[in-house]
Amino acid sequence: MTTQYTRAQLTQTHALRTVRRPGVALELGTATFNIFTITAGPVLVYGIIGHATELIAGTALPTLQFTPTGGGAQTELCDSAADIDTDAINTLYTYTGLLAGLLTPCVGIGHLDLTAAQAGFAHPITVTSGVIAVTDATGVAVTGGLIDWYITYLPLNALGLIVAA
Amino acid sequence: MTTQYTRGQTLAQTRLYRAVRRVGLAGDLSPAHLTPGTALFTITGGPVHVYALFGHVTTVIGAGLATPQLAFLPTGGGAISDLCAAAASIATVAVNVLLTWTGLLAGLLTPGVGVGHLDLTGAEGGFAAPLTMTAGTIRLINATDAVSGVIDWYIVYLPFADATVIAAA
Image 1 (spheres, rainbow over the protein chains, first blue to last red):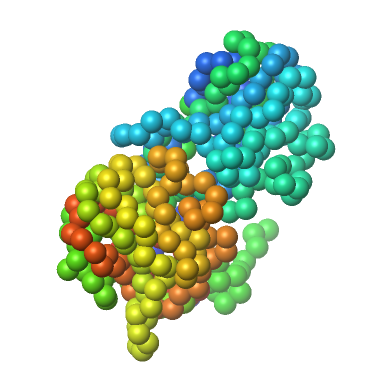
Image 2 (cartoon, each protein chain N blue to C red; image 1 turned 90 degrees about the vertical axis):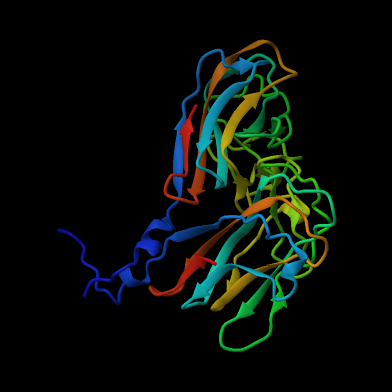
């Protein structure tokens, strides 16, 4: 016997998704670099992770910012990281989900544990349609190194989507 | 070789998150909606686990004393009871502000500090673990002034059975 679902049930059904935004050369610096675009939000975001794929070379204190679509200024998702200059390949970055949290590099290369600042989100944050960007107002204008960014989310409708910017 | 599952084994027990949007109405924040308030969502075939329940301001909230709270009226017996306490006034809250609470009965619906996003700090932190609700209706109460403004409401849940569903009221 086949389980039958109503149309209402099927259109409400959602699974977690993850998007990768590859790092781009010379994008760590004092300008704003968009990394993810959210359309047909809100969405629930379960985690945002950076992955250094090239040695960081130069002062960089990155933070994540959000600009909503349709009204509202750009505001911080988290606080600025401590200087990540010379961070090695396979360093991972995340934060606690708190506005006061800092993007924090992992202690063990290639893995984040559940200790304080590198523990990631205890549960999802909620984000409307808009753009997530990396900014670094206090570093140097151009910093070497590459960071891939990953976001894991739950869309709340059939059109809810996050794409790499 | 393809793994086959019987209906009773795995497929019928498999659940994905579901989300429902209840579009805001201009009169939602009105003293006409005293207890038992206005219905936002109807749960049938419950219980469910509710992972998130939040509001999204789509038209700026007007001046006045708007102190919304959420309540639950079970189906088949039992009085309406609060899901959270009455909010501090949300008058003049801007478009794209989100509101949620901690999941505690003593929590307050609280606007996000950052426009368009809620973080995990204190009152706007959202549910650390899912809430469990039976069949019934989730209702919005605003026991103070009539205030203009529109809030869309979203609920994210896991059903416990095939026939369990939450619909916008």
